[in-house]
Length: 334
Image 1 (tube, rainbow, N blue to C red):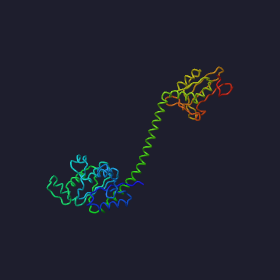
Image 2: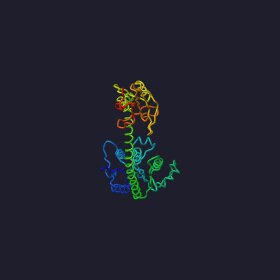
Image 3: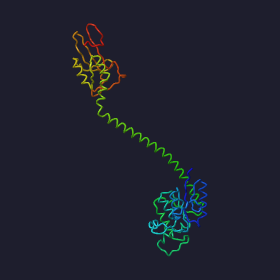
Image 4: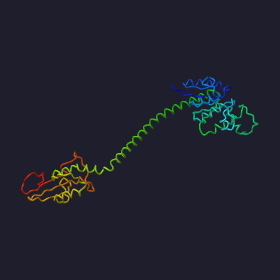
């Protein structure tokens, strides 16, 4: 199982006991502690030892930087010297590398050094000042550098290793809680993203179908109207042998007139149903009446689509009024 890799960065001789205490603390948490005195860093022969330390910083997840009163070994990195306009120590370069690579960084400064730092700020630029708790005032200029960082400058003072391990324990617990929270949010974000993808796909599908059917909409409407229940009823009652369709009342009226059936206006039945009515006087003295329900038309007198399953006999009625009873009233004598 992968373990968090924590690089311990500091000078060695003055802080070796604190380094060992932090090492044991990290191993107790199940983390992998990286420190050069324990052989954690694989050194090669192609580059300076300093470069292998820097490589390990880049491959670590967390860097714990401990700043005491000793400057330590100077870094030989020319690029770093050019960037910061002065020679820094190897431990300073380790911290800068971690920050540049956006690692999680925790910085601890010896309490006495931190207190004397205020004296440095008051006398900055005065090389004649002697400082009690550091062997090189470049330590203070480095502290000033990291305190002025916009990010990743989590700095705490310490007196003992317990101050450091106690703070780290709280921070690691906070990181773990944040990880759990983030995992919960990831599920929510993934669900939202999936819904957005589904919505986008549906919109694209609707747009595609609409574009495909745009030129065919009129043909589709004609097919629907040719098979309209009213058209089938008229075809049977008026004995029409050819296909036709009706768009609205005007089409229906023209069809009736073409077959010598005259409009009679609108009528209302006792049950409240309203109809358009037509009539034809037959040669035998009888009169044929055709009534079409107004519910089949919208407010613009356009025929609305009706499924065959929803068709009712009361929607279209034919009556043959004859002074002498004959035949079947449901058939027209045409």
